[in-house]
Amino acid sequence: MSRLIVISNRVSAGGGAAGGLAVALMAALRENGGIWFGWSGGRTDHFTGHINFHIEDDVRTATIDLEDQDIEEYYNGYANRTLWPLFHYRIDLAEYERSFAGGYRRVNERFAETVLPLIEAEDHVWVQDYHMLPLGADLRGHGVTNRIGFFLHIPWPPRKLLMTLPEAREMVEMLFAYDLMGFHTQEWLESFCDFVREELGGTISEDYVATLGDRSLKLIACPVGIDAREFAELASSTTAHETCQRVKDSAVGRALMVGVDRLDYSKGLEERFLGYERFLTEHPEERKEVVLLQIAPPSRGAVESYQRIRTTLEGLAGRINGAYAGLDWVPIRYVNQAYARDALAGVYRASRIGLVTPLMDGMNLVAKEYVAAQDPNDPGVLILSRFAGAASQMKEAILVNPHSAEELSDAMLQALVMPLEERKRRWTTMMEDVQRRDVMWWLKEFTAALAACRQHDEPEQIEGLPSDGAVEAQ
Ligand code: ADQ
Image (tube, rainbow, N blue to C red; front, side):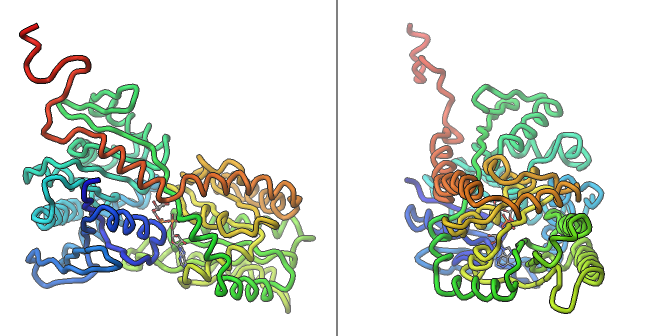
């Protein structure tokens, strides 16, 4: 296969928060050769295009530093204060500032110019996520004719919401510089098609090739998975066993409900706490039988809406604990810390209920990790939001509307009293799919679809006709 040039905002080689995803991309880069290019996370006083090369686990990474203004406008600004809320249907939080849009375009152009000399003729380029929507067009502007694919890790918003973005049409037109665009679910893909048809007058073929003017873009729904085997192994590791035991001991025989999320308003944490409060009010007999452990490491602390959610949750946890706690029981344990993946696997395994209730989520890997970490002989129950991309695959979870405290409360009760046989049946079905469509499956699906695209400057072949001008001679 061709070498792969992976381009993403951050290069998380060697694991980190991206976990299985980074491991899978690293595996592909090791197998096919190539480079992982992105922002180092560091600052420079003056951007020169200097690249820092490293070899990590036999993979070549190339990173650049950005200027303060770049970070403010592109990362904290357009990526985190405009696109992230908008694409998660939160136009009430989205900020539309020309300086953010300008910084975003400038940084994408800087990425394009800098990565350019690293791209060889036969390489396949794979751009990741919403930080880099215009990068394909910028690369084409520099004459790159390689196959370029783009994968969106977050939802694609409904047309009318996207139209609140002043540069929406231009942005979507630029996406036609890519050859392939991947989404987690058919729903996000269809939303994209709707925009192309209704706002741009483009067409979509039966096999999901979008056409706009003389450009076509192949679209696929390709849900990301986890490294299920590795995660199940982690769950049987010594650290996981120890953590599992410690967490169980600390619950003193009570059933544990666990939530593990980045501290982000899209993850529905406030609504989850309210649902739990409702549960405690409606089912006094269950009080003291359960404990909610919420693990939520802070993220994007430079953005105000993220500071606000932290304060809100602390207040809510305090209120619920104040109202219900006894001498030997606290209903919510709220921990703002990141844990190693083996410890996390132990926490999942110790928990009778996994609470994954985002208000909107591209996929949500925690849902899959929770399932992969369970004891097959005594699996826990997954409560999953209908609005997570994962819900399109994990139908055996208890699916809930995370906005409804009543539904959350009912689901908690249903999960607590669910008989072992039903738990096993639901878990087995989900586990089979988590194993089958794992992260390597995702990677192969996408790279194979990219390889099947025509090279950008190749003439289109009309089926059944030779492409060498012999038509006239017939
Ligand atoms: P995220 O929004 O970051 O990713 P998610 O899919 O839930 O969300 O992945 C989070 C990862 O961080 C998981 O692997 C989880 O284990 C880890 N994590 C969370 N809390 C942790 C903690 N306290 N300690 C250690 N690790 C922790 C975006 C999209 C998602 C999409 C992914 C992948 O928003 O919808 O699933 O990309 O495409």
